[in-house]
Image (cartoon, rainbow, N blue to C red; front, side):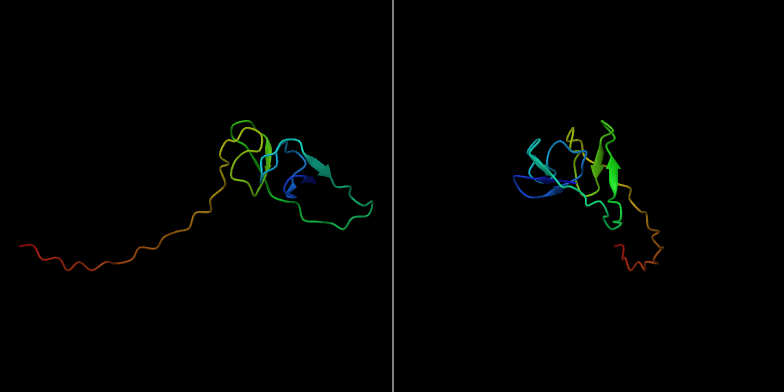
Length: 89
């Protein structure tokens, strides 16, 4: 994990620019303790333009600024009957 020295946002290790303030290469690296507790892996998304691995929280690629396409869970819409009270004159 890298922390931005400009805005203190925690960034994924692969980013070259902060996902919040976009400042390039201005990070402090956090050292992991030798016996760190197991932490759930953060969701990542690969850019469709340059294949860079991005944190699941950003809207644009941290490398090329291409919009991130997220998987959308489709929901089934039930059909609702509609009564028509139209008068034709």
